[in-house]
Image (cartoon, rainbow over all chains, first blue to last red; front, top):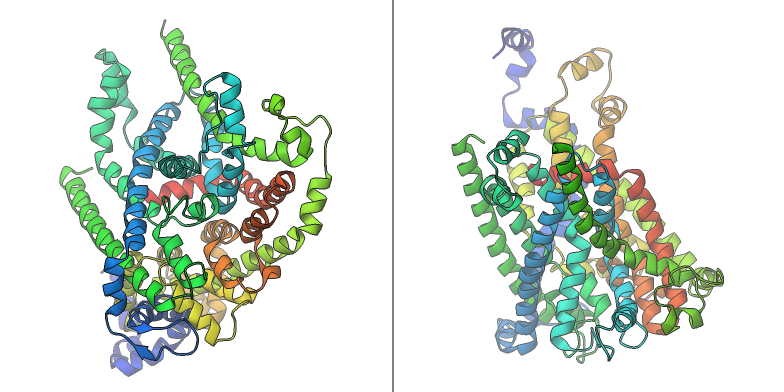
Length: 324
Length: 280
């Protein structure tokens, strides 16, 4: 403790005396008042929904009135046998993994090219690649349904013009192709964000190391392989997990591009829950069944998040161990 | 020799970056171009490379703005975005101030709770929130969209404010208190104005999030089409008028141009903050 601070404490006997809990709480009454708005929103939109999801999932309930017909774990038992649920579950994780596998390497390539002080137009390119990140995902999805349209879409017309294809392709009408398109458009939209992440990592690599590498006669690939990549490894793990966790939340893009189709080939957890709870496509809206589905998928996400925090912590420990 | 090598390397960079860059702007340029074309010109297969319309059709915008009610959707989006930004700023700054500057009983528990919510997946708890809005009688009002958007965990913003307020010197409050200022006055007149950089960051991030929101506005305006926001309106429009591409691209341009303009004005601020998220 600094001497002057200690003196201040001694001069303020009130602060010393107020040591009973109630006195302290009373003394900080304004603090609690300032926390009220956050606590209200937090309870209503974070805490309550978690418990309510679990509660609703135990009933057979269509969302009208309070749930009354208690069914125990019947919803979960039905979910385990529900092929469409597992289809959406699998698609969501497959989407997250493939999208990450596409967006991270391309973002890294762009970041390496832009991490060059002599490239004057670097900030111009950076703005360009970042542009889709700030735009409305739902609208991007709709624009791409036009561009990829089998009859009048720009992509088919361009490819036909170049002579790459003879017949127009139904990009969003064939299962695997539609899935690939959703992955590619999703990556296209997010690459700018990951480029910025990689740039942040690259800027922590000291310039002298590159110079030293070049003096030793290393080519660009050798510099990347032996200098850049080893130094990027810790931040790369964080970026990788960011990329997967973020992609697992997919909804807007799939909803607007394919609606989960064709024939559920691009159905994700978000679209599955939305369809089950809010539309009558598959009979009556089933609020409690959708709650159970959301809960089950949410649990798998918590597992991923815990793994993530574990890995991040380990990396931090390693980093501290290395003194970086 | 070295100079030539540098020029050579930059040329190689442009060789990769330029085509990629074109791929990145093409959808936006196509959208703008289509929004000014006539339907015949847009669907003319011999004209796919021609992005500048031969005659400019502003009526696409008139149609989107009036007939397709994008004027209403625009207003709804502005109302939702502005209200959400203000509410989020009030909630996160007051909370950050209390957490950052005072050691009150229960602070550690609260901090732990806030940080733990990072691990709670959002979006899969829509059903209880929908149910809550219904019980509050707010279903199919803009208020429900605003509350749902405000309610999402804003851990990052709270931590930003907490960190900032914790770093301010003690003397600020002490001298103000000697002058007779209350807790409330100190916060609103001294502390909050000082936190302008954090306010700007939070406001920009939340503006983008609210303007681009889709799931909450979709769910909470299902029964009242006139309350749709731009993204939801766009989704419904393409469902109803499948073939009006020129009107749809005009509507899409109306929706995207405000965010693009704001991004270009604040891009340095924006990109630095995104980069900061990974360094922290």
